[in-house]
Length: 102
Image 1 (cartoon, rainbow, N blue to C red):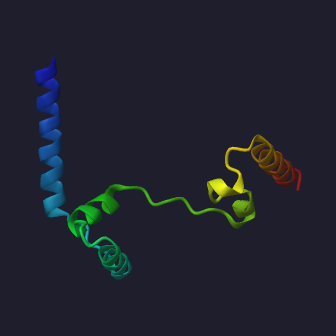
Image 2: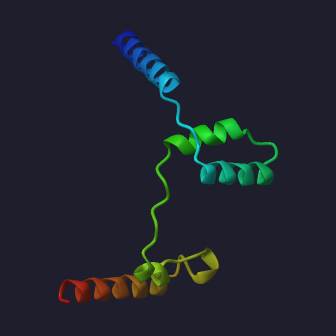
């Protein structure tokens, strides 16, 4: 069974590498500029590995402006304080109810 899994994985990986070779993902100008900035901030890092990472990771979801104030930015803001979390959850619920009934 393990041998079948390894063969299947190897076959899929070979197919992916062949496809990627024929269909390379080239960074846009904006992505290239971002990568250059990353290189400046990470001189010991590999720009090639970073580009591969960026190619296959989903972008960070954008935060809607309507809920930005509900997000906790850092621990000093009280991330682990139940009263802060409960207050924000209650406010999120109120906003949700308001939008459903609007």
